[in-house]
Every structure is written in structure tokens, then in C-alpha cells.
Image 1: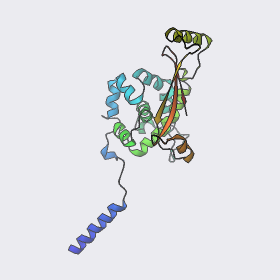
Image 2: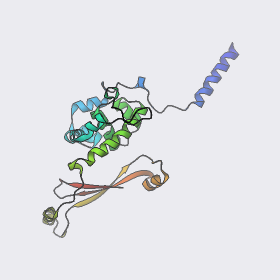
Image 3: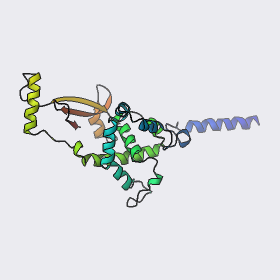
Image 4: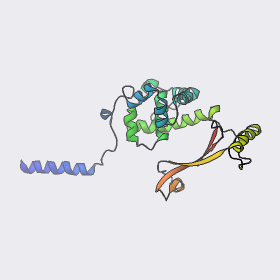
Length: 229
């Protein structure tokens, strides 16, 4: 009996060593996506500071994106999966998030460096759903922003340039001909799978991967341009 118990214990130890540690959460460890998640509390509070901190947009801007096509795309486009007919009708009743939650998820993902485990906890989603939704939401968010006049890149016309230049000269008399200001920002990104992209985004000084952003602002603070690479 003692020998049998020892053999069983050795088998269990060996099995545990062979199985990699789980770095993700499963459904029993998570709240239901539509019930009492941290995201639901954040959404219900409708606090501009909280929205900007977690997603980079205030409440009105969040709703503008939502109502400018994101909701329509979410409700009418089938999420691409290997076991789903891409030409079929979306099964909204089987989605773990509605359009509002989907936009919240992708903006949380874009606005922070948090791990997917944190996203799972905030939205109550299992890993495969987080991966699937982020990939899908990035596509429809891109389509939405491209269709929004407020999100278009438009250079100032001659009249605006003259007005902006006068504003700058009034404050900084030696800056003749200037019509805006510029600043740079490095945003941390995931390590790309493509070796060429990985090399292009790697910063040896900080030992991290970044996307470089250039921000161009008008002097009235109302308009700006973002250049990313």
C-alpha cells in the first residue's frame, strides 16, 4: 500500500511538472460579462476623468465614436472565426459584449500596456474571446474613424495659417511664419511577430518596443494632427 501511494505521488508530481503553468483565467474565475464587472461600473459612472484615464476619450467623444458607425458595424458584421460563416447574420444574442463594451475593450487595449489577464478581469472574458474581440474591434474601429469627419486629417487653409501665425507672433515675436507646434511621443506596443517589424519598433536605449507618434497642434488648441510610424 505504501509503495502504491508513493508511486501515485510520483506520478502526480511528474504530471504537474509536464504541464505548463496557466497564465490565464477561466470562466469560473471571472464575473459574467453583462453583470457587475469593473467595466459596467465604469460605464455607469460616466465620469470624464475615468474615461480619459482608461480609454483616452471623454464620455462625449466615446459616444461620438459609438454612434458614428461603430455600433452599426458591430451589430451588422459577422465576427470572423474558423467555425463561423462569414456571410451569415451576426448572432448578437450570443455575443459576450454589446457594441459599447466592445468599444470599451479595444480602447482599454489601445490606451494602456495592461496584460490580457487584466482585460479578462475588467470585462469578464475568457482569453480566446479577448483575442477574437480585439482583432475584430480594431478592424471596425479603423473603418469607423475613416468615415468620421472629426477624425480626418485636414491641413489648415491659407486663412487659418495666417490667423494662427498672427497668434504665435503676438506671443513669440521672432517666430515668423509658424502656424503650429510639434511634439513627439513613444507609445509602448506588443512585440511584433514579424522580425522586420520587431526590429523597426525596438528601442535599444529603453530595451522596449514602441510606436513613434508626432503630434502637431494649432495655437488655439482646437486642432491637431497625429503622424504615426
